[in-house]
Length: 185
Image 1: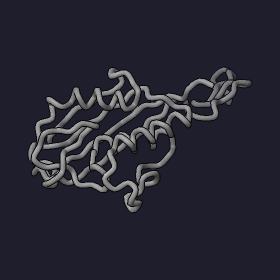
Image 2 (image 1 turned 45 degrees about the vertical axis):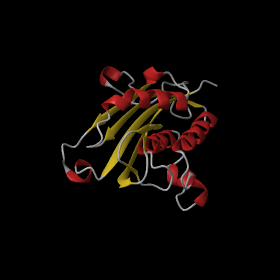
Image 3 (image 1 turned 30 degrees about the vertical axis):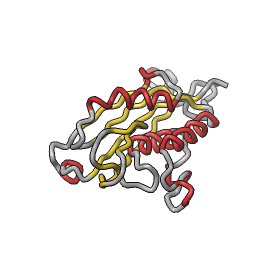
């Protein structure tokens, strides 16, 4: 395209002549979300650890919404859909399964696609229990599950200040964002 004074300009995002465009993005972002109701008679599992509390999360598996959000974020980043595609709740073999099993399988899918974790950021939304004492153990457990340095994993907790169902302590939700990088060939 001709610019001022007859200079040739490239359009934004175009490649110079002779340059090859990469066939796929080297860096990819994925996001995940999950929420479950708190119920009596179940242990509370979050981020791969048991958290002391009088109620646990209802779910087809163990209900660990942190690991479920993490799995969805990783699967999305590498174009593999979500947990429902790989671990459908209608399949009885996933009933009561430890969510760490899901993370292991998703980690294998990510590696098979030749991606590696750059970083992970998780936010847990809960009015109760107070999660501050559990955040570092969750971070360590998640880093171990992902075979990643702890510095690549962030886990934080927020409350809704009594707003809505989560604020009334009816459940817990988690958001996860991951950045993955394509392994060099």
